[in-house]
Image (cartoon, rainbow, N blue to C red):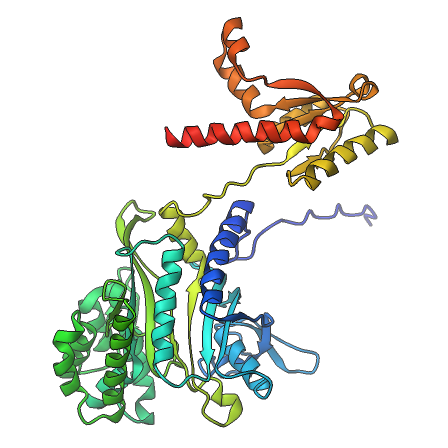
Length: 506
């Protein structure tokens, strides 16, 4: 018998599929972007709200599957009281639950914004993650479509606040009531046709991806993709398909309004939807938001089933280069609509609501393409090096570090193995530290410090070839009294900032 113990197996470090680690650069870019979004929302009179990552599964909406383990589309677990909980799928359903639970305490209309992560238990792919951030704004308790018009205007203002100029974005608006009228007009009204209607909506939502020909196949018999996979169609006949494609193919709403009204004639919801679209168009135009910013566009569907009226989408219209090197239009970065039935599920009474959601990660990619993020540079910390490890020396190094921080200068005291001083300067170089503070026993005895301009030192080592050039260059290292440490460091950092500014303008 072999009593020799097996060597414990080393744990493999691996990231779960569809999730990503966020680096300092990405975190700062998101913070910069969300601060600008928040400023616009606050300017419009919206207040912040935060809901938990988990909700009871039945609160998340009717679009979730009905099964013994509700884990398709959402990540779910069973609590110790045997109730199913799920990570939130979006930020809208948790808001509906919050409003219903606190209905007697909140003031209607309730205007709120929320930013946070949402989770989708779906197959990940390129640019498609299972965890991503959304930034939502909603108005609950406002029945008129003027609230929807305001959402569209706020979305336009948000994009411009982020540096996206007019002509590079468009807020496209439609109304699900109009689409419901079209579907009713072609014989798809009634509860028994709900599944077929959903298939039609999903087909229309693929218009940008597959074009009219591909959508026609999805509305009819079905479509086979390049890999040979077949997607079953909605089963419409040619006449029905033509009417749906006419509706989603409208590019000039004013020119097509009469024919559209004829198409939905006799359907109450369709007629109501057309009136609401006309009202929204008139409101945004009166406020100075012309069709170059907000446009009526019947091809906008929005995927979720809970939308009941106006729907809108923010689209970036400029070209970017994809991973294949092809020029493509960037496309949608957010959207939303009216969801009058979502809060009502909890209340048993009508509670109107409308709102939109920005896909933060996707919008951040767009802003990086435009060079609109990272303008506010982050300076790496000044490094206070460690020459001696006794209590007195360590106390003085820490005191210097705290004095720099108190003066608003980012600083750190070296916390690694201080006995190899060369490694400290290598660390500073790899980290990109702008300045190093050095104090050995001799300097400490006379209460002075060596202040090393690491940026200038690196430049001089690559450029200077003779003594004359050295004498003309900015000093890369100097000795200063401890009392002058903060002032000298500020002086060096200011000179480095001026150099960066000159380099940017060359």
